Length: 266
Ligand code: DGL
Image 1 (cartoon, helix red, strand yellow):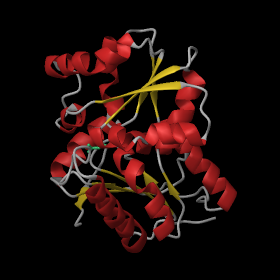
Image 2 (cartoon, protein in one colour; image 1 turned 135 degrees about the vertical axis):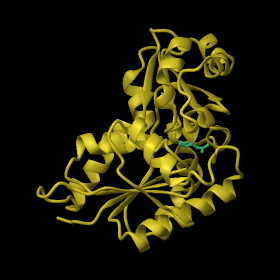
Image 3 (cartoon, helix red, strand yellow; image 1 turned 180 degrees about the horizontal axis):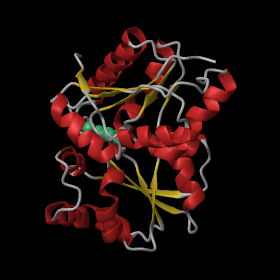
Image 4 (cartoon, rainbow, N blue to C red; image 1 turned 90 degrees about the horizontal axis):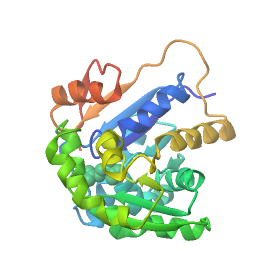
């Protein structure tokens, strides 16, 4: 048994979708969340820069917060930095690419799976690579959705503008006849209503959050690192941007109050 918290990071609010799943599945665990809102979006940045940010954030979690495990709750960061983080840090480091893909494989009936993500995620080819590694019995159709993350960060989840953008960006996937759409960016579940409207009811939307939480639980069980039930856990949230905005909007997105967000100095 291990009292230390689980560390989670993302470029901004998106990783809160994974936090929600962790709170639901592992209510005894303490969580430390780093949202790099001061430097979002990661999607358009060069891979090397995203790798460098990922190392900085993981170092902060391990060295300053003494976490027992790190969850890279950002597809862009996981796409380009996961292997390096695993090589550099001693704690288990989990990503969101493989769990999301597994969930999509379970959901599809016609083996045609759409994957949407940031420009960085789609350009990295991380989903195709993972599909080869796990011999996924599906055809992937990938599309970048630049602009979606910015709408979420502004709290604009259901506006006419985001709808128009979604129609334009998702049209090629509708044409491909996918029956499942993997939301390959942790921000995108917050746009599920808009994305679902555009794709149509028969297309199943899959998030990586729940499957990632199952992976975290499996690692805790396998390593004996789980926190024993007892006092309710305290969670801490940090933002490299405006902490007041992070607490207010983060609480709204998470669906439970974030009493205070603390400054994250990168
Ligand atoms: N949540 C991040 C992801 O999953 C968003 C990246 C960004 O900031 O562009 O890719």
